[in-house]
Image (cartoon, rainbow, N blue to C red; front, top):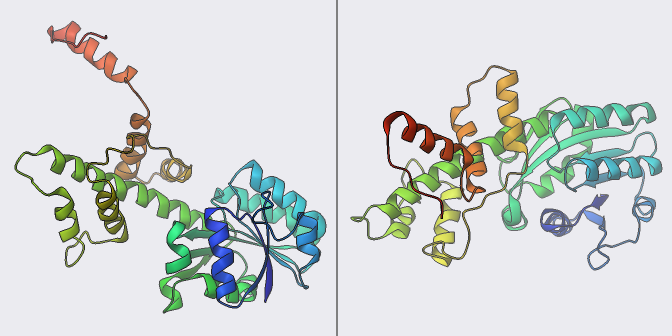
Length: 294
């Protein structure tokens, strides 16, 4: 099998390598000529056998729209686009509808695994037509972890379902990371605790909180025991917000995920206007002391 892969960043570049290691021929395109196999998207698509399969791995939003619009120009009926970035599920529905009149197939694939995916494989969540999923299964099998397919791959449902599942996955990830982070801060704060890193390390086997995220936190603490080399400033890439929005739209309570998202907002404030207001109110109604701004 020979596919095209557009987007060769941290994820896309490693995916190209893993696919090649598993016997899938890959022609890759990126704007950086240092990593790209071809000079243009048109050249990439011309190199593919029919029916052509193009996997898109670029940032969600306008970059994905632009690439799909360009790829569409060079594809024909029976060809297939797999969108593997972190697009919102509603964008997948729009993209599939855009391509359908030309007979171009569309699958959305949520991909989890980060920079470790090359070594460990990627967790894959796919949405779209069952026949198209079967057509692309050699690709999915090459990318997923070794072992039972069901433990690293799922055909979630219709177009958009793959990215919807990945959205919820990332929302859960937000809450799990926040829970570990709050536990870390409390352990660091308590004077009777003498080995924070060792405590987390001892949780890696046999405990109910053992997980890959825990393993990564242990690794981070090995590299920087007091996390003194980084600031407590955390961005969000969109999926956490979308998960909360979907919770509201479907009347599903999500206090843990919502709180973890808001904690990221707090991390970006040097001095919270909201907390200034709370301090001012406490001072007004109860005469409570406030700390003066410097």
